[in-house]
Image (cartoon, rainbow, N blue to C red):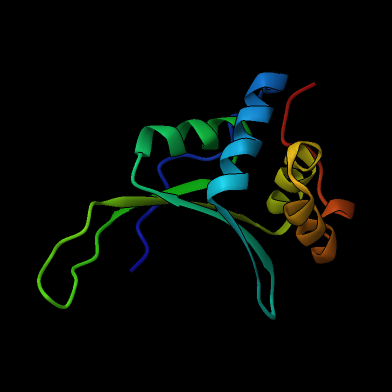
Length: 123
């Protein structure tokens, strides 16, 4: 069962530094998942505060904590998952795209996300 998101979009324009920071985090930790119904952007990590700050900058949802238990009984650290899909993912992709590396930019361009969505900010 998926846990409820803690919060959603912070509707203010983030600074250039915040956007660049978020793009760097997504570049290193993010995934772009394409299935038959939608494109989903995801970041999974054990640092809730970092993921919550990422969410505050770009929007989306943070779910968790989740925890895995290995077959040998070892319990892994709890982790949280940020994700965004649909029009919200398109807005996030447009926000981060100028700061991403070639491989991620190409993947986002291939999804068609850049032609969709509006940025989720006031003003």
